[in-house]
Amino acid sequence: MIELHRLTHPDEPVYINPDLVLSVEATPDTVITLAPPGKILVAESPEAVAARVREWKAEILAAAFANRKPTHIELVATTSSVPVVPFAEHLDGE
Image (cartoon, rainbow, N blue to C red):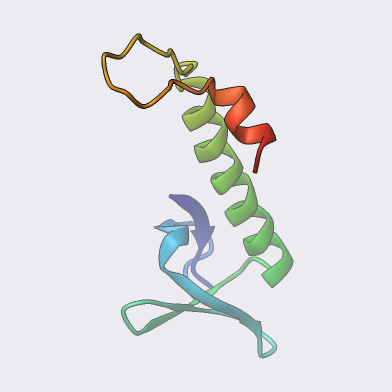
């Protein structure tokens, strides 16, 4: 969630899920259109809202990659008549 401030109550924070933001407009006040249909007027500029959304998404991605376990492909012997092709060679052949 990102913290913003309603235009009518600038001292009280409002928290918005950035995944629900459809658009941000300056009309001249900043209007955020949310899904499902809803609008909110905030004190922050559209640029500030966009920056907070980018920061939030970057934090989510950084946390996801930090917790990701390294993956590797290990080939095992097979009794099938189909030969085993090493993965790296398979990629080079494409």
